Image 1: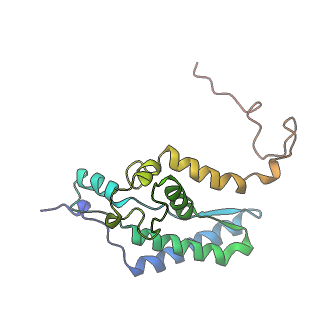
Image 2: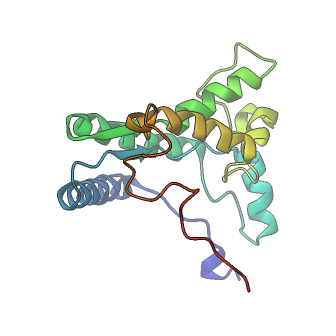
Image 3: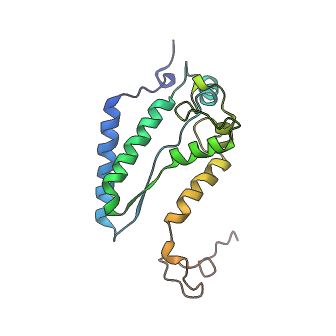
Length: 182
C-alpha cells in the first residue's frame, strides 16, 4: 500500500482560482504596507517530465508528480494577474517563457513545438536537463536565465549613483558591519 505522502499531488481548476485569489491578496497586502514598492511577480518555471519522473520514482512516488500542462496553466494565471496589476508597480518576470526560449536556443531542433517542450510525449529533453537539476528546480544555467530576466528590473535608479555616497537603504558592502568568527 502506498503511503499518502507518496501519492502524486492532484491539481484541478479549484487551485487556479485559489492561486489567483491568494496571489492577489498578497499583492494587495504588500502594495499597501510599503512605500511604492515594485513587486516582481514570477511565473513558475517549466518542468521536464521525464527527468522529474525519474526523481519521483526514486523518491517512492508511483508516478510523475507534476505535469507540464498544469505548470503552463499556473504560468498563464500569473501572467494574467501581472497584467491586471501593471499600473500598480507589479512587474512580470516570465521565467516560464525565458526558460522555454533558452531551451529552444539550446536545442538542435529549431522547429520544436513549444507546446511539447519538457513533456513525456516529446521525449527526453537535453536542453531542459541543462536548465533544471531534477526536472523541477533550476540548475546554475537556469538561474543564469532567471538572473538575466531580473537584473534589468531591479536597482535601475542605482545604476548611476556614486559609490562613495549611494542613497541605498542598506550600507554599501565596503562599510557594512563585518562578521568575525573569533
